[in-house]
Image (cartoon, rainbow, N blue to C red; front, side):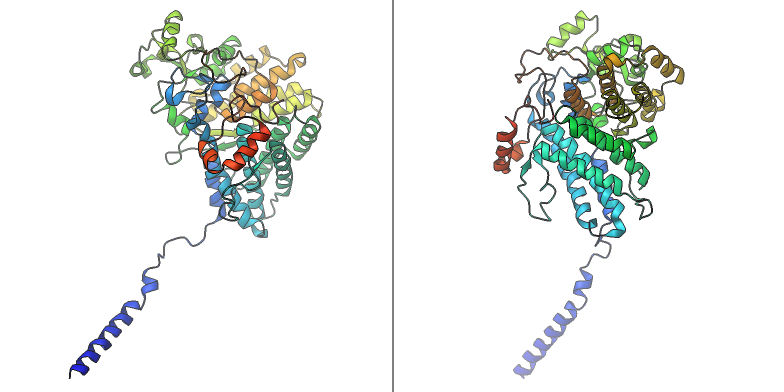
Length: 506
């Protein structure tokens, strides 16, 4: 009897165990989880994250003297010509983690898929864009092994020389731009151009033009060949060709977020930038600047004090810290340093403002320079005028309240005609204005062209031996984790310091 009872219990437990196992795998499977991901969404993630972090206020826009803050600590950077690696790492981390990683994955999964050939070439173009921002900012960087930590276990990527990087970027942009084909699958889910092949081609060739111009001093022969190929391929022809990241409540403009949050009262338009616009009666000053007249403190920067009148705008001079600027503001007849002009955070620098990566204005000015150099045919004056006009018209794309009337644009152009005897300076000074808020590009073209002519920041406690910062320093995380490859780059390029020049900066 005891044996029968034991057997019955064991048999019952067996049945219970079997019944519990039935459907176990199905019950523990998430039926709503994605098993595959359309790679075009990876491209969208790359595009969205290409919008620049707030750190461009600390370095890029500060180096070219468009923006300045008198504050130290977390905001120390170009304002004092000092190294602040909590900030210099921002572009590196954002672009490698969210741009290059995604474009590398797209290229890997679409390279052998003829049905997604356009997406493959779009990813190559956008990856080239991301790498240009990175190498222009830092110099030698991981390139050929970048973004391959998972696919190839390249977790400690080798740093490649900038000359080799640019050679490959030019190859990638040339091939990918030419290979785009409107007769093949159109990637309509793409957030940059909705898959429009013609616009992607113009973006690719305009970026190729930018790459060629970057080498104007380092390798003039290759620069000329590259520029000619780009212009022949077809570059941007209007503002609706602009490569622009659109922002909304979910994907906000980080620069706008910085200026509308903790640092709202800490950043000011720099005097050299304001003075240039004011001296030339440039109508963009009214679109760009606001001044809280008579503000004695941050809380007093209220709408009732805001004035966009160009006549009252006063840029903050460089060379002062938080204590020194107090006396200078008093000498300038201001209530406090809060009384200086700012980038208007209710128009250009809203949290939902667009971020322009490559524009028709910049492209036209590059073509004007190429004509001036004798590299391509055309009228430098026409391209110059088109570039200036395009940027003035671009103001309306930030906010309707920043739109410049046609009469004002025409009057400015009539009063400031192109002068071939001073062509390179005139073109690249306008490029400086046209690249406002695109800090990495303004910084790169300033080093490349040596225009505009700026007086070095006179702050006495600078941490550089040269007149200007020439690059951003590597992240501490790279130095500690990928030290062997970082040291190899340093031995080839020069010290990991702000005043070390990148290869193309001659």
